Image 1 (cartoon, rainbow, N blue to C red):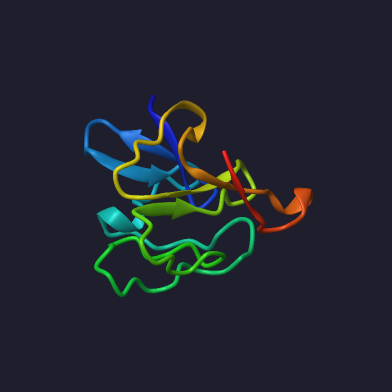
Image 2: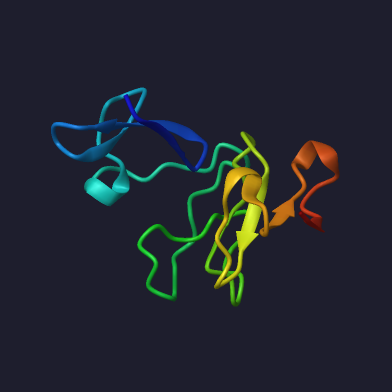
Length: 111
């Protein structure tokens, strides 16, 4: 079974229906018509996206000008900011990483 994480919540891929489901309820994720969930780190809902991204922005980060993607980590892993032209691979090499809350807050540090 293929597993993932959305905003800190476990999800599973339903190969029959070709949709992501919340692992605890087996209901569809927002991309497939289901309900949105809060960030497991800060407890807030995603902020609206003014640039056309369907998922919205991580509430802890908001819009980051020039970034192609970003994630706060939702308290489960180290967050990152990815800039255009960079390919984030194993360990998010090449991305700017965000320090987890227990390591001093949202300070940025080069990876």
